[in-house]
Length: 290
Image 1 (cartoon, rainbow, N blue to C red):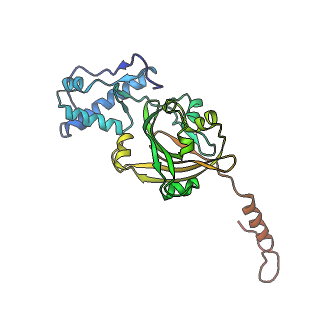
Image 2: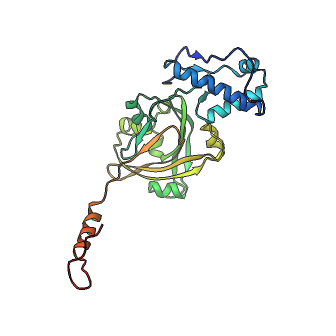
Image 3: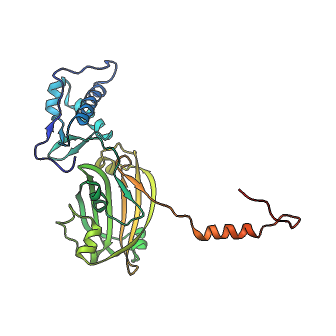
């Protein structure tokens, strides 16, 4: 689903009540019934988005309560089969042959990395406000603790599906120059380079897996505590100045991160040099090592 089609196709649902295993809870039976319909429709259909019927329509169709419908839709969202878009409804996520890929060896914004793959990134700006630097942010940006920063928090959507929650801190003199109207469509990297003429050179990254905090889990449509990828990234300009510090919490099922690791030539040289000088106790030529 690339963006939102002006006329989404409705998901066909069978004209009957809820079947399935009667030993299962109603919400589980409804989840399975909708999963089957979504799977069949997304495999057979074209690229046009599939709109899930409203809660009221599903309640009437299957003869269940609205709470049961919400439980089923929440389960489908956690499984990555649907996405919920405020004010527009729920939509089926069509399967892809390959997961989107971002190369960590290249310093790119998400939209910049996804565009060549035919994918659209949209940002929901959750906060853009002045913030006092804590110890970590101050150290990362080379500023005194308590220095004013611009804090920008965004929910990032890839083809309409939530993929990450990004918290960014910039020196106030830089952050307050960013155009708020551009943030929903543009990477911060592209704004820094194209609008503020601050060419970026490299970034330091620390990556780990963490349980999703409640607020982040809700935004990513995951249960609280579900594992997410946590990336801490500090980005530097060509003159060596740190201007962007970020915490990114990413879903693990909607994006692949790839990196090519090179073997150090110094390590190889030292290993070879050490082996060439190793001798047996009798002083004879050392045996071959595997």
